[in-house]
Length: 197
Image 1 (cartoon, rainbow, N blue to C red):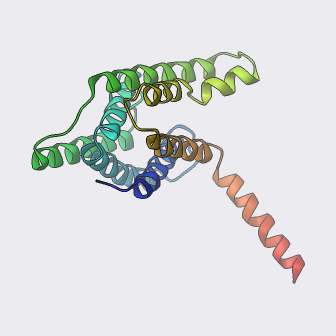
Image 2: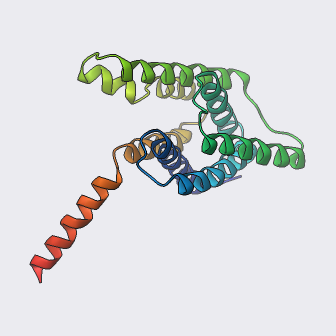
Image 3: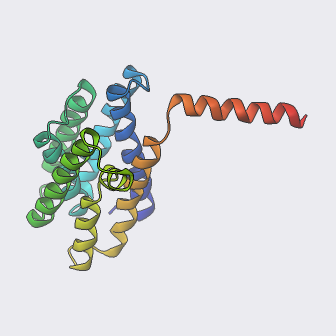
């Protein structure tokens, strides 16, 4: 059984890495080569967790894969490689373990919420619905609603909220970072250091 601390750290990595790859291909903000290699590692980590951290990560990541496919979001080489590696790693470990706990209702809830989040986010990009509504939909809240509901219903222990929201926070933090912002911050830091000397 994987420890909660390790699980949280891996979910932080996964959330940030997904957004990094997304920004590299959709917004040309990062190196495509770096994003591709990161996606391969990402796929391995996701496949590993989906296999050994059942039933939570199993339902969460499989629902993510299916909802992204249905929403046609696997639209570049990196995410395709990530998906292939994740499925391959999951299949190998699943065969070695012999059995994995899979909760169909949790999978369905995550999948439906993830699909709605993807569609709502895309709709918010196309339509002007006001600042607060745009922020609400870009945050992708429906998966959060599904997760909290499943915890309240006893499907998952409350401790699973920690890695789940670690993933969400990491994803949103990377979304707010760009190379230009990083360059400006580094320049400002260096300027302050020079003036302090």
